[in-house]
Length: 278
Image (cartoon, rainbow, N blue to C red; front, side, top):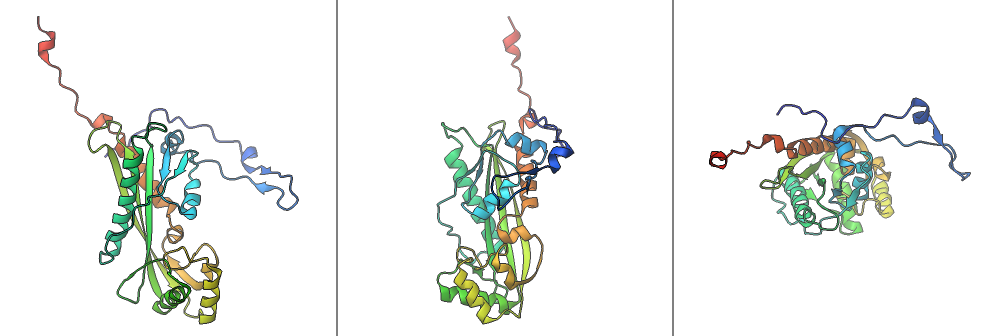
């Protein structure tokens, strides 16, 4: 598909001056003065277009919300899918995680596309992350069910040496033409290899479990926090392990928005010659 120019109505604002960009903010508190200014929004036409539309993140994960905030989308709504994630674990990990994320996106799309009060969304983004044990036949790991289960899970990940983290990203955008099926959909599955430190002791694992940081996470640890003390190295996207690979997410969003701008792909309407006779 040939590249398209900036979308209609997507004229980009001028960037700030370097004096403004490098200025620090002052606060009235004595504990955190002169905090650096957060970065200005990415000046990309597609993101500029989405900034005036509803953007729905179909996830209640605070980590995904934080990562999405880097794109500077002011109308971001959090509407998690409450349907059970009930695909069989006998599926391959890539098929499983992609099917789960697609289901989330489609359920929220059907729920919100005809929202009379707020209007249809400009983008729905869903994601699902799984951890696959490298030592037990590639088992898909759930969140720990108890302290004992949590300790055993982390010991298994340590003893296995290496495990895989998969995140599926699915973006849905209503078609400009409104023709069937009504939406454009794009997806991607990101893979990251994580190696636990073989020198991690049982004592450290138990101490980490008691912090409860990993209690709400598949695999039982959070790389962005204390869980980093368990990890020796990763190969691939760091933020994939956290729950949303930002670079891949931006690419999926761009593809879906461009695909949805399909008016120019429709065949021209045929004119009935009889209308001009007589």
